[in-house]
Image 1 (cartoon, protein in one colour):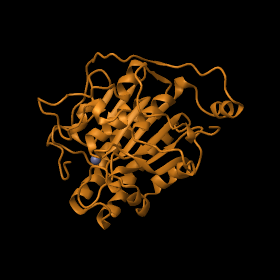
Image 2 (cartoon, protein in one colour; image 1 turned 90 degrees about the vertical axis):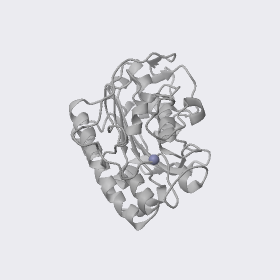
Image 3 (cartoon, protein in one colour; image 1 turned 135 degrees about the vertical axis):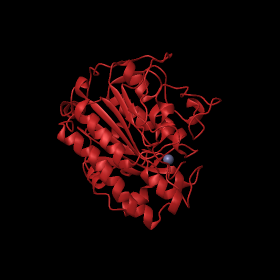
Length: 324
Ligand SMILES: [Zn+2]
């Protein structure tokens, strides 16, 4: 982790472009022909596949209880109009880059191969061994975008997978406000069908002042304001009726660090809202339902109608939808 990093002077990050080959092809699925009446009603309330969007927002280092203690009105409002659990789990390493890669590939670190947590060095894998959400979406003909607050997210910019992306220059960190303003601009002008937004602020406070510290709880308000900025852009762009929003985190923490199987690091919030999603629904009411970070990938891909040729351990959390 790189608390306290700075954007390099005179530069505005870099864009990821190019083309990457791969063995996984993807396509958009037709709607199933036989549907239960309840499911049909739910589907009629949801937009056609071609008009759908998905936005995944990661609040880096947000331990669920910190989010609940803090004044985070935008997060609370999303819970009220969505389905959620405060008992989702991240990977068993619970560190930023491997965990985010699992969030966006649907497989654990031993499968995607990103086990380091820094800007890649020459000996490191430059991109995951597994296709990301951006890869499969782009191959399915969807437009993709990512804005991330830490430079190591360049690992997720596989050539050809992102139409629009911005990460800080090597070693740098963007403030949450800049990440949110960028996402806002793209939502209004480019309207990407698949958008990932990474807000790094809470993690930096955790490393400097401690997870659960008064400073981190207070700092969550600013993170929430940045998050609200993204939500406002969606609403004002008329995209609320066609967008599934998933908000989660890569890990929590204890003391001034995080990692491993410690539940204070491993438990993460997972909140989804959008057309057809149950309102104010705690997924913990379903004792058999356990959400993992890999499920974010699977839920987003299923919502967008992307068929996967390689199985992932993540599954679409269909329990969030009315009629399921
Ligand atoms: Zn992190």
